[in-house]
Image 1 (cartoon, rainbow over the protein chains, first blue to last red):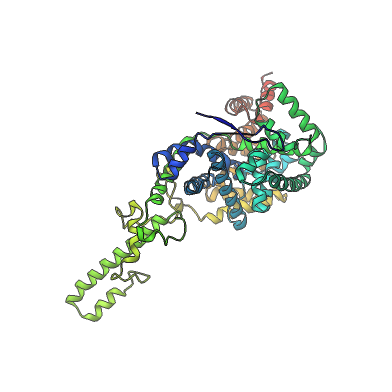
Image 2: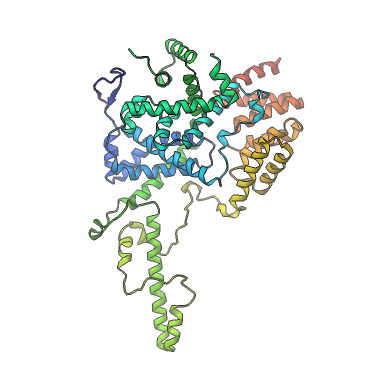
Length: 214
Length: 310
């Protein structure tokens, strides 16, 4: 059963509230080595982790399964250090995010494996000759820019950017998930977004969208 | 009162139920903030990327089972005398390393015993030859001192039951255990290099080179992970000069259960239109609308299906 607990009002108003986490007892039992609890917990959080991995690496990435497996193993290890500062779902998301981002960085460093098919944008399509809808193309270009930037930014900044722009968390949520002060998150995100816009402006398709109001 | 951060507000609105009020606020936000437009585009893209696929349940179940199995090894309490000195968190594969060491020790003990038995009947010099012979490549740990092997044999519960089973260095996924070993194919790197070179050629505008490289990749290893995107790229390159060849590739791609099926169906429709095969075009567009109703192709496909029906 869920029970809402109000937190003190933040600078942005009192809208952020924390809900008592129904997965917490499961996580505690799983962290203590209870296999049944671990099984149930994984059945609840593994779909989220798979979604996070698909977002970070791309749905067609050949290593999605491997990376998700790595995420599950990492979560099992991390459960023993879980300090209940965020919800279990958010904790699992963060573990998945970190593992997937590390996998991308490793792949980028090694350059031995194929490029990300998810970022595959046909030049013909980009020129608008194909009947593929423009919004879809622009969207693919945008996620390619975000992913590239996440690969290159310092890890702390990349994590904040990914939590916000890849997973869609608000700044308050990012602050809770990362355990960082809201102002720190805001500052990291501001710098990352400036870089993001700069890179997007270098892409003809995105520049058009950014310059012209809909 | 300070103005809310545009992308933060976007993230809030993005998750709300899409009523008229939310749509209005979202439209206002997107009209006023380029940053919000960019983040909205990326969130839409990421949402598409993370859609559930058929077979996810099987995949997740296998992943969970594997994690539980590994956790069973991780959670086994180490011997009391090692609890203080355990240096680092247990890493993946430690159970397999423990088993390898145990197997090595057992093998060494067997060799020693055989050598000892043989030595009773033969000269003492040959005994040393048996011990130092070519069987073990690295010198095994001395059998008189089995203490270093104690932790691993007492740790993971699975190690005692099958001590001589050599674990794979990169164990296959449980869900693919029935499939043939991937080592049967050509070296991974050659396909990866071909894919990379073909992409580079395509981007540089060297279409003929790109076509040749994609075709070579598909010939080298048609089941490679790179094969579906390579086939898609090849089909798109061939679409203009040879719609019939492109159609074959799109149809092959559509038959396989890859995430590229939507693109393949769209390609089939385009090629069929170019070849005047109206019924095939209609069929592909219908399949596309039915199977991928939220796809960005779907709305255009509906319009085209209407045109094709007239």
